[in-house]
Length: 287
Image 1 (cartoon, rainbow, N blue to C red):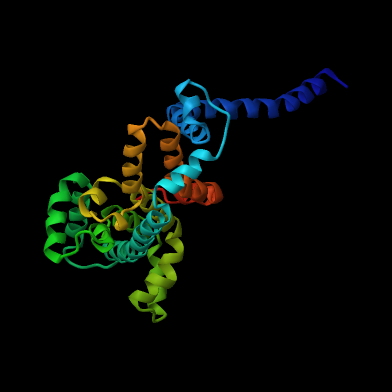
Image 2: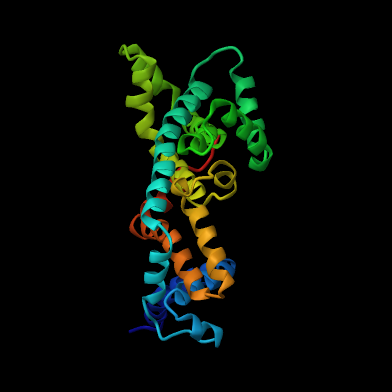
């Protein structure tokens, strides 16, 4: 083998190693940023399986399921799960309809005042949710919907974030495609359901994920609206459970309760991780 051939072979052999090293270097910043979040999450997971006596001694282990068993028996988790699923999934189904139709109207229907309506949607994005708690509660009390799951979901039926996201997605669709469908005799509703919706599924998936995670973990608004224990969602049930466990310094029980609250979202992410990442990657905001 000539010297030139030997150098070429050595270069080709080194390229995979260089690629792997470069990939690892690119991952280092992401790992450094995620470390402050991973450490508490890992400790909570391990503490959920560690007896409280061991935690008070600063030890992790021996690992057992006792904390999970006691936590499950200490709170009405089946009822909490059911209320939370009814709230989050029912709300999401309504939101998918409202944000889709609003995004379609803001992007494709040429009517006077459309741009001003879109600016009003943008204004709502700048309002902090806490600023709307009092007027929303007064409106629900006037309607007689306080202490109900319907009243809990009502202020979120129309989402400015979802309308904005879907508008951006609809604007990316070529105008020629819509004109061809209209020439073939399609109605605006058929254009929306048969032409546009298949093209904005990543945007719908991204919004759905954000909505589910946000409302699954929401605490302040349910605390204001819900008074009856049988209508509590997971965030309220866990807060009540944690207060009672904290008085006895039962840190293992608190960690087990936190794991039970977050477990459905963790399982969903583990099962659909690739779809989650692709939905956000393909729904990049343009235009």
